[in-house]
Length: 212
Image 1 (cartoon, one colour):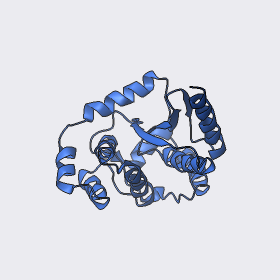
Image 2 (tube, one colour):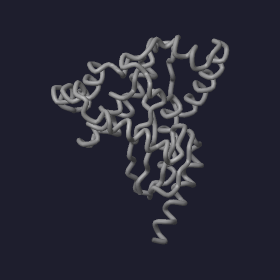
Image 3 (tube, rainbow, N blue to C red):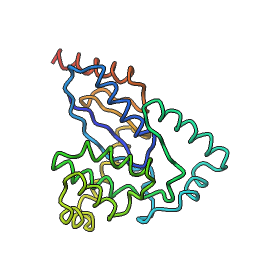
């Protein structure tokens, strides 16, 4: 079974959604799944260097009280899937295009699943700037990618247009929020759904496969 996970690397709910999907898959151990990580850009107009985190949050959410409420809720949801978000460590909200390109590069070498997790950890737990090419190169190299080849790729414009096109494609499919999950291209559900809900989607998609 193929599951398209439409997500952004700077989206905390996407990290939660990833962990909940893993729990759903553990509930259905007999279902063979191939996840495909599809890019979505929450901030398509973000400057290449990113922006100051405080300025970003003030513009997006308004008052500090509202920011505190929203991120408190996210933090509680993270705890439910063993994620210790450390939002206070994040100084900049990065442009996420290059992190998606790193995943595209890693996919060709069978390392994408591991690097998705590392990107989330480095950004949301360690507060590192995953829009920085040097940091992305370091992340990739630590997981076995060739550092020189990866840096050359990230310093080029290869696949930049592809990331934008995938983002447009997601919107054309009616996806306006992430994470979203598409099961065999037939069943789509949005939001960081509970594992039991995702498990039922796996059941529905499996039933369709059996009929076919």
